Image (cartoon, rainbow, N blue to C red; front, side, top):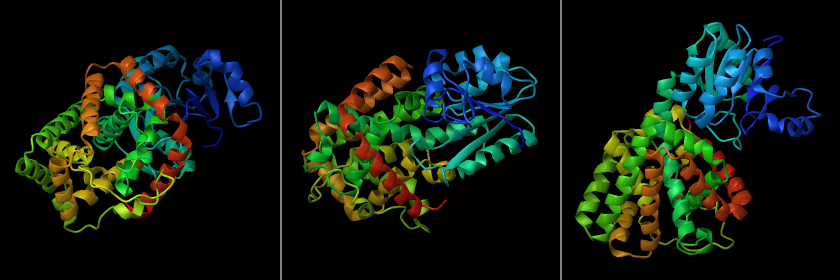
Amino acid sequence: MANTTVGIIGMGDMGRIVNACDRPDKFQALQKEYANENKINILPNGHLVSRDSDWIIYSVEAEVIGKIVAEYGPSTKVGAIVGGQTSCKAPELAAFDKYLPSDVEIVSCHSLHGPAVDPTGQPLVVIQHRASQKSVDLCVEILSCLKSKFVFLSGEKHDRITADTQAVTHAAFLSMGTAWAANKQFPWEINRYVGGIENVKINITLRIYANKWHVYAGLAILNPAAKEQIRQYAQSVTELFKLMLGGHREELAHRVKTAGAAVFTSHAADQTLLLADDVLDRFSLAETPKQRKPNNHLSLLAIVDCWWKLGIVPYDHMICSTPLFRIWLGVTEYLFRNEKLLDEVINTGIDDDTFRSDDLEFTFAARAWSECVSFGAFDAYRERFTNIQQYFAPRFPDAVRLGNEMIKEIMMHTKT
């Protein structure tokens, strides 16, 4: 690895290493910010990064990857390696194939966690798209400083697994935040959302909204598999909510338990629970503890219904799972493998209208996010996301702190 220079095009939260640039209008500000960093060389534009670096990583939004590679790709140093770390590889790799010179090798990557998460032990996908094994080994050697767990996949397999482990999870949390904002609620301040599962809902929803909108928009809109899953999730939410509204107890119970059996039975035979509700009881934003109230957990029922309808077995992808997915799978599994609690949830959905207004807004939200994704509406996605982001912004520091603690807890309880 001697004398190997790494270049970054795009200096977002996940891209600040060695030779680096962002938009030309940010050059002077970044140069000043990194004046005392002798390992980071800020350059005016991507042409200079491309010409001078041995491995160039495009750290830009998936929405604009084609435009950026078209501009800077032709300047790539002869024999260099090029990669990217967008969450959707299909448009990224297509742009590399189209705009990079033929004498350039392509090794892409994707860290399956957010910028605030310690990368140690977290999955890091490496994609050998158009490259020798020697180039792959070099990239792995450079990335080894992150102490992540390497997973080697094709771009197509990456996108399928990413959709399976992130798309519906994100849709659920985005919809929860939308519903709470629509009802002008801060859920930790009211006595309906109490207990470990509720803490997960609140803290992870706020954690997602504390990030940048394009991280989720790119995965949802540009990944065909993600579109299908988000559409099914909205449909599952709608159909289950209608069963609750109509008082169809037997039909609701049959559908929920059929879905649970399809998703969890084969795994439950020889595995302990990933997570217990009481493990997360202490991760609350509420100032004083309150007693747990029964909830119909529509968001959880719908995610298992969605997996069942699409034939997704979530345990198949644990090696590539994100911390958020492991948390969500853990509490979902806890619910569905606790028959007494599952019956309570079903009965609550039929008999108790405590959460009706929240569930109504949640159903509207799930359908609206699905439409946004189906239409490929980046502008609408950004506007929806940022409006809700502003509503919850004052509590982001606490939520991110508690989210990090929950992730550490999950890592202790889930060994993959």
